[in-house]
Length: 559
Image (tube, rainbow, N blue to C red; front, side):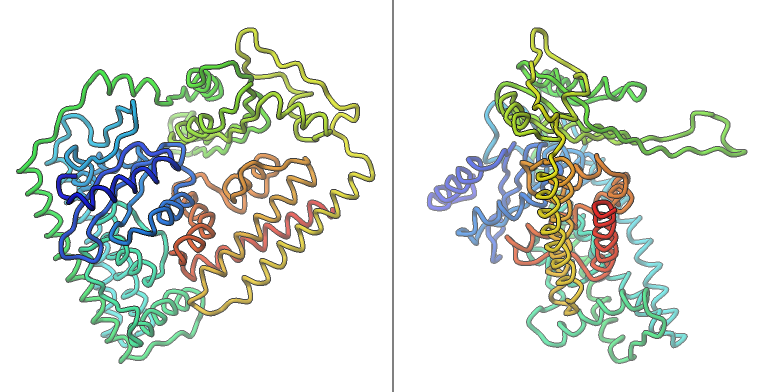
């Protein structure tokens, strides 16, 4: 705050008030930049409850401070920012220093920079990352010159594309601690241009030649993978070669600038020790599970985090296992497993925000995940009175997994026990047909888009198609209306009830999760930011998966 004058200090306070009154924010740090279009950069660390919805949250935060163009925001989930610093993020290490702190949530003891953190170790990890990425980049660059010399320009152009893409991805990690999962060079360029003042804007979005080169790069990646006779002329290839060399040179200069700034900051300020007692007390709230009893670990953790009477019911459970047997495997237990539990939490008061935080904390762990639904006892009884199939199936035929002492909800079930009458079934099917038509319309609209500038709209329409189908299935089979209308939540619910959603969009590995998350947040990116980082390669994958999903849904209902 000491870097701002009185006027900017007043504006900063207004921004902080606007953000913290709407969103659950742990802390905010301020970076200042002189001689740039964007003078101030806010590093916002949000609550862990946003771990699966950060992509939807960021556009809303940007929209909240749209009246202050001199401010740019970079948003991270708090625990992920801390992990990135441990892994060697110079950007977050430098940004999240105590002297840059402008807001801390009341009674929060969260500190992103670990106690007694070794700055030299942080720098060493950055050097290791650079070495690994340079090796990959150099291999593709050598491949480019090799195929160019042989006159195989199509293959050379692919190698060139990969050289540029990997360099951009490396710069994104270095400068923002974020990586855009896309093959679109245009998207990488725009992300860095909007996110970092050090990026020299190697392409110009307003120059026809660069616009053409962006399109060629889009065509190169798509065509060399999906077409047999793609060709690129030497003149265009040489233009792209110039851009490639500029990107590589810029990466060297940027790295040197980042390291120099980091070393200057370390020499001018020591890293403060954190209170060990606070650190230890924080650890007590972190979820840890016994792999032999994952369900019990989840129930115990939920109970420890909610200070009121609750009941917990299981309405879904999925496990994916990978097992190896062979001459080199001597251990019979050589397997990995991913467990997912779908739980309904019943309480007397509304605790959905707290439950979202708990879900986010549990889902940090690898090998286990949860989908938690939170309803009050009064809300559920109203659903039972209206003959809700979902709540009858969950509550009438299943005992609670956990119930607080002296807390046992006494449910009154409908005389039809959640079974719809013929008239109700007819109305439900009519509603399904309406959802099916909506989904088909969105899908056909997306399939009809071929203009490269409209790829985000294409994927957005696929997103809406699957969302409509999910809503249709939940309404038709279970009479259930979700309280979160976003694709992540809807798709997770469908994955609980049917097998095929898990096959179409598996989310076991980090890569699979990133692919789905990029797809799910397209609507928010387009609505609030006006664009999305998704590229044509991803669009084709989403096209195929969307078509499969809609077909499976129709077959399920129509038999």
